[in-house]
Length: 96
Image (cartoon, rainbow, N blue to C red; front, top):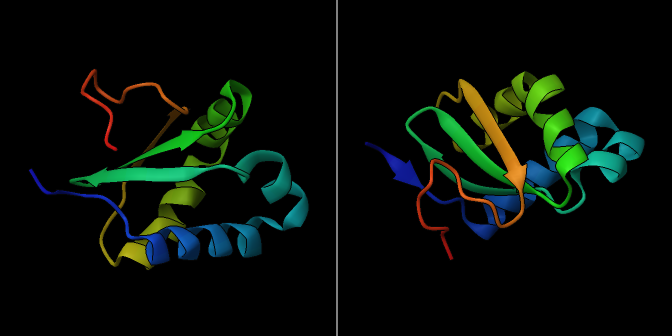
C-alpha cells in the first residue's frame, strides 16, 4: 500500500489551485481550513472545518478536487474522502 502525506508546499499548491479553479467566493465559503491529510493508493483523505463543508466537497466537488490533486501530486487520484477535522479515516489513528 502506497501512502504519503503532502508537504507544506504541496498543501499550499492545492489551496492555490482550488482558489483559482473555484473562485474566491466558493473557496472562502467551502475550502478555508481544508487540509489534505494523506494520499493512500489513489484515494485522497482530507479534513474540513465543518460538517457542511465536508459534505459539499465530498459529494459535489470531489471529482474536481481529485483532478486538481492529480496535477499537484503527479499521480492518479480517483476518490476523495473529506471528513470534519479530527475524525478518523478508516478507523485508524489520526496522523500528527
